[in-house]
Length: 194
Image 1 (cartoon, rainbow, N blue to C red):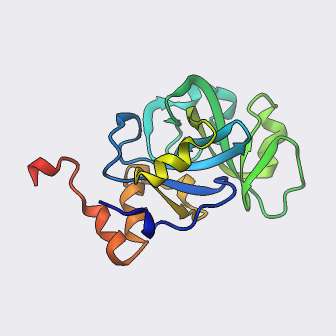
Image 2: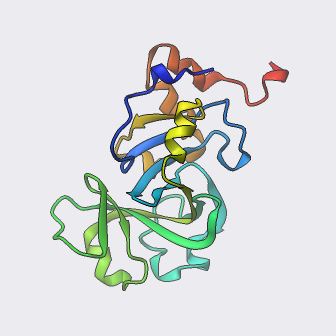
C-alpha cells in the first residue's frame, strides 16, 4: 500500500500532472491507469487515460485526423465519462505560432479543437492522439481520492502522452520514481496469485 505522505504536495491545479492509480484503487475503470490532467476548473478536474489503446483505428472514426495520429494510430479510451466524445491531445512544434485551436496543458502539450480543419492545425503539430471519453471528478472528489490512497500525483514527462508502448506506461512511471515507490511497478495484478 502507498501512503499519502509519499505523494507530492497538493497542487492548486492538476493540469499537466500525472494521476497514477495505486494498486488499492478498486474501480475497474481506472485499474493501473495513468491519467493526465487536462482541465481543472471550479466544477472539477478533467483528465484522459494515457495507457488504454483500443483496436479501433482513428481513420475509421476521424479519418481527417488519421495522418496526424501518432503510432499507434488508434483511439485511446480516455475514460468512462462521455465515451462517444473525442478529445485530441497534441504536441505543438517549438516554433509554431499561437492558435486558438490548441489549448496548452503542459509546455508544448495541449488539447486540440477537433472541430477545426486538420489542415489548419497540422502545421502546428509534431504529433497527436485521439481519446474517446474522459475521466472527471467533481470539486474536491479527486483530492479526497488522493487522500484515501487511490491516486499518486507525479510530474509528467513530455513523452508520456505519446508512449510507443502505452500498455507499459503505468509500470514505467512507477519505476522512474525511484526508492520504495519503484517497487509498486512490480505489484501483482492479482495479489492472491502471488
